[in-house]
Image (cartoon, rainbow, N blue to C red; front, top):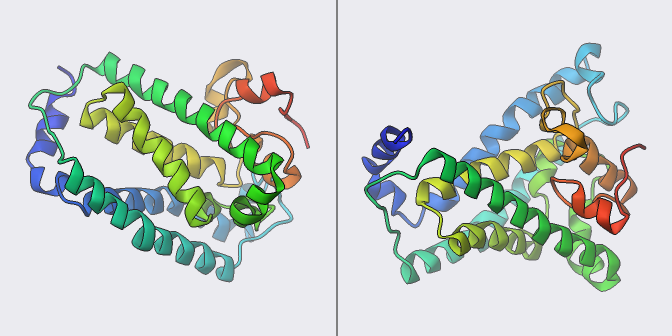
Length: 251
C-alpha cells in the first residue's frame, strides 16, 4: 500500500478533514498557491525578455487593478456562495474516512476518469453558453472580460459559472465512489490544470508538451479561446473540439 503512509498522516488530522471549513480553505489556498509562481512571472515579464518570450500574448500586461478585481471576485464567490453550500453538504452527508488508503493504480485511474468526465461536462456547458446568446450575456460573459489570459482569470467568473463547474468537479468522485484521498488528488490536479490553462504562458514543461499526439490543449489552446472566443471549448483535452469541428491550434 504505497499510499498508506500519506493517508495515515491525513487521518492524524481527522478533525480538520471533517470540518465544514476544510473544502473552502483547501480549494482557495491551493488555488492561490498554484497562482503565485505565475504572478511572479508576470512581475518579471516586463523586465526580462527571457520570460516575455514565453508569454502567449507578449503585448499584454497584468495590472494591479486587474489582480485586485480577480482576487475580490474569487473571495466573494467562495465566501458568499461556496461556503454555505459546503456547510449544507457537511450537514447532510458527514465525511466518511476509511482506515485504508486506495491502491495507487486505482487512484490514478479514477483521477483520469474524473478529469475526462469533467472535461466533457465543461465542454457541453461551455459550448451552450457560447451558442445561446442569453446564457452568454447573463452568465459567461464575465469570464471573458479579459481577452488575454492571466493566471487569476481562472476563477474570474460569476456565481452561476463557479457553482456549475464546482458541482461537476464535486459530483464526479461521488459518482465513481472514489476514496477521499482520490478526491483530494483529483481536486489538486483539476485546480492545477485550470490555473495552468489561464496562466498566459507556454512554458517548456507545460502539460500539453508532456502529453503526446496533441491530445491535451493546455494554456495555448485556452488562450486562443479567450482571444477568438468561437473555438476550443473543452478546458483540457482536444478530442471533443476535434469531433465538434471547433478545434483551433494556431492564431
